[in-house]
Length: 111
Length: 115
Image 1 (cartoon, rainbow over the protein chains, first blue to last red):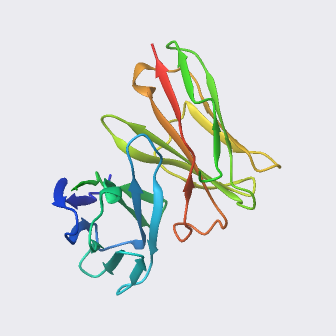
Image 2: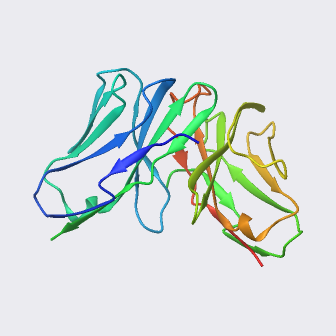
């Protein structure tokens, strides 16, 4: 089983703050990286599918970058809102049927 | 609502039994993925089917099997159930079958409790 690490484990920010978190993964056998947003009592919702080194994706106030050579991806949220409160999961997809989720970063945005 | 449906929502059964979980993908999606979320292991990929054919296999136990039917719905069969199989089972679907490159849409999950 591969190590896909996310940090921090949890984060509390004030409404309006910008924040970011990290997903670290093995730099070899990289194929793709997925980011998901997972609210309590719901199912994961896809945010981004990232495939190329240097990829940058954006959806509204949320954006992500990818560095496959050093094995990390950052997720940024600009101007956090209470509705952004959720767990943010990354998933490393490697060659050879490897599909490993990180343990997630739990974000709480305080109004 | 992602458009992916799973039945049943909850299932309670005993050790040694066999159950079938059902998933209907979003209209137009050809791939179905199964995941298991347990307390100690987090979210794990089990298996992917694309247009009726097995496409990728993850950490799926030999006691578990899946299939995708011509109408594209999928079933996950779990047999000789053990206490440790208690988990939330998610199904997801995507349009294409290319490994890892497709955005996946998750269903609401089936919560399985083995007593």
